[in-house]
Figure 1 (cartoon, rainbow, N blue to C red):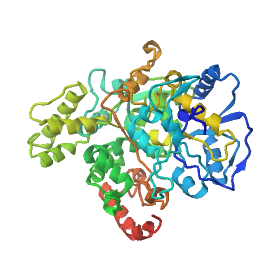
Figure 2 (tube, rainbow, N blue to C red):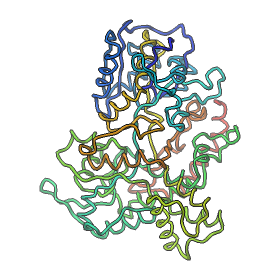
Figure 3 (cartoon, rainbow, N blue to C red):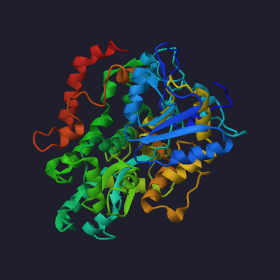
Figure 4 (tube, helix red, strand yellow):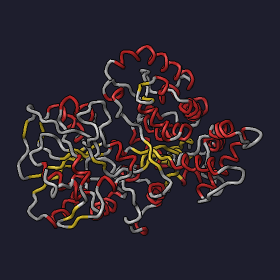
Length: 529
């Protein structure tokens, strides 16, 4: 690739190598760059605006943009067949390492990362690799065991915001009264808030019918819950051990016990309290709803809380005539952290569970208020809790762009991606999607605050907070992408098993079943790695 023509930075978040393949089918049009983009919560206008800006510097460029909800399927087919007329795909996930190793159908874009963003003849003073947040950058790199592809990049990250707990302020005020509730700082406070909402038994009239306002609503898209309980696991285990949990390797060797960290049990125990039918915290229709339906009901005010991503408001703005005052907040601190701190550091946070949780909540509030210490805590413990408070779930590791190996316009694709990571393009994307690219320095990009909804302001407050540290569930380990190990080995998702109407399992029962199944399959899984 010519280094003067590398603008790939805008859409490539999936890593794929460029092994020479004789079986690729070239179907694109030479000289016409086709960019195909999954049309989701980020809207369908940003790429047109970026292309328009790019063509100011390259007026001769012929570029076609295709937004479509089915682009993900098209991208998978392109990887399977090594044939596509698209030169760049922007999607939300594909098994990149698999296609790198077996199909050789994704182009190696390592060179893009070594180049500086470029608009026309103007280069910035930093490479694309150095511009991206390190936790996201690492996810773009091949993590398998084939030395031919190691330290190579095959995808480039795109804009992706935080996923967290969202409060419908109007529903909360309708239920408990304005000024009679506060944002929960710990999972214990979250449970207590749920109890108050259930006790209030408030109703809301919509279309002539009365509906009970529940603490939570969810849908058949049960994986949204993971944006909360995975943060709890990371809080309890710490960033490095969270990585061990998703990678399943300890000191380079696969270890079955890495799949069962103590924090996973603690997190699922707390999650069970929220989703368990008998507690009445969740709208009982939840599991039967499509995700768009539950999101609509939430915005209508039929529930006070919902776990989702920053795309919620924009995704629903064309789908419902209702509006509400929503706010994204950080996932509350797992209350079990107080026990861990006491045991690990030989200190006391209180005489009973209630006092311990209140002290933990006070510490979290101090962290949120920007305090640098807390009476009775060592600097080490305060720093540990501050980092845990910053953990924020994202799908950014699965929101990326890549170039098919069969592209007939790789030079143009590289150059376009290089432009994508210029400050100019990042600002355009930010203004259009209200979501930033995963860059280290967020301070240089600004939005007109007068035209931003309160929900988006709450999202940006989390995104742009220096203490925010992104976490995600990574499938880059060979035992996951090659052997097929998922987040569970049960035939039933944990969110369903713990929350179904009859025959619901406890967190301990679910983990025990997972352990027994994985133990029986472990040696078979290792044959693939």
